[in-house]
Image 1 (tube, rainbow, N blue to C red):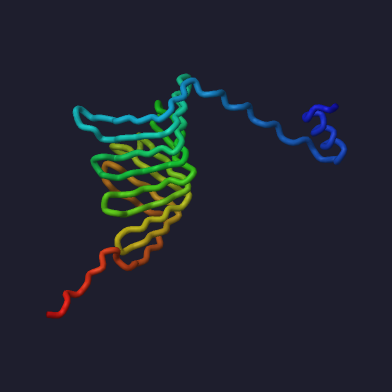
Image 2 (cartoon, helix red, strand yellow):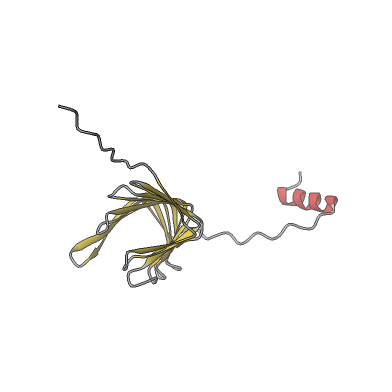
Length: 179
């Protein structure tokens, strides 16, 4: 009986096709796997970030991090971000959120993007960006853009080719009943 690899070579040679490209070496398994992770980041005595994930994988040799269904709560800004997959380097301070990234603020604004990069070195307190498209919806507005750049220290966001529209407000004002 032929092994699968021998069968593949035979099929490629018989069909006159070129050989398929070599596959990259497999990623080594993580050195640390943590389940049901919750952490709090503090500055002095004040908590600034709460984060959680059902599973986090770490590589000590590369400072690599891979988290699944990660949730991050920026306490001072009361913003909650969630990503299906969060991957990056703890040493370099760069993380890439993918598999659907969502944002929710205390004021009710929601946002979605397929992919968002978080970079600790962007601006004085870090930043976020995406070129994968973004959609925001808030009280009375909706915005779609091809991308964005956010500076956390300045609390400023610049959108790439935004399209906005006014939408009915969630707060419906009713007239007072007649006496």
